[in-house]
Image (tube, rainbow, N blue to C red; front, side, top):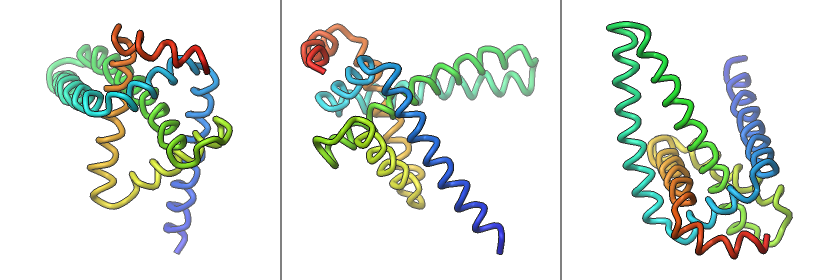
Length: 168
């Protein structure tokens, strides 16, 4: 009887911590997250495609390094950890911007913290839906976030959204 309660409380704690992480990222990197959000909003299809290709490419390289690290020599774990860290940071920044975009569309003109919290909650709950959320929404959020992060560094996305970011 105790196990379901512990599991539920664990999921609630993870959701609260994720919202707190995204709020902290919003305060530390407001300009970068705004550029990522604008790239996700204006070039959604390109962001998803670029993110999906990069997830598959770097994910397969990561699996290869992990396999070599386990079966050949542990030295291959070093590039695996480095690549996993870079992918994790990129996905986290991208999904934080996606949470803000979701919050903007859901509640409109509220303070940034509330928009980020509401967007994070909506994405988190959507990712908890069995099968569709686990394998669909989670991959969609990661691909969109990573692709928008990559697009936010390109000259075209940066020059078109720089004027909008300066008004923030």
